[in-house]
Image (cartoon, rainbow, N blue to C red; front, top):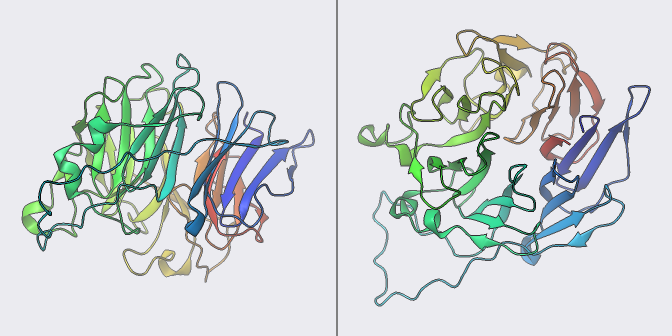
Length: 372
């Protein structure tokens, strides 16, 4: 449903609907005043899901089967008890991160399984656990095959104190094929519904690591992973150290360069054109604002060989809007995009990002957008 936009914010879930006149109308917020980390409209049956991060009160998950008229609480992913070590573990080495806790900090990604798997949901969490539900969120199981990988002890936080799974892509041709991104822990793939895993980040470069670990696949910090639905072997990553593209299902990655910057958090992949993707550039590292105070969206239509920058309809410089990794969305048709910022501004484009319309500047800080 491309005429509905879910907006997860720091102060509630907002839903915009497009009426017959082509105007977008905003309904009163759901979970007003409460932080919503991610939302999902299940394309298989229309069920809505909203993940909340209530701090001291923990993470919560809600479900609506009637378009948001009524909500019911679901189970949340629960980590199993941490095994007791025979001896106290030694302190981590100076170059190793502290161990992640065995407790749910946040639901950071929520995706529906394939069309042939009714009821299957996948959840990516902080501190780096992947969970699977087979019954629409009634029960969740930690995917121990990934959690127990020895490489996981090398994952570390990127932005948050602990590592997290923020992107989960399900191959529409084979719902057993999963690709996910960990910040910071690289890109991981499973071809057997999560039974076994391979880290597939060859070609990525982590300039923030010591020289001997710059190409270590487990040390990579993909900010966001996106997949072309029509050609799922084409993947895009907005990385901490640039933009990367793979045309062989993540086996190899090519580093791309864009102006005014290759740094950012968000990426959206065109659903049917494998050569087209969108990004929102920013200044790198500690200075996370638009380059020269000019908010733009960049687009490539030739697989990253060249990029165009668009700002028509976006605020004039100086502007200091930052777009989080889930703050850029493209609809199933590939021409309509939505973008939301940390300032609570929301823009819509009907022509592939070339022109933008500001829908509002008065929302709470926007965490995630999704058409559905």
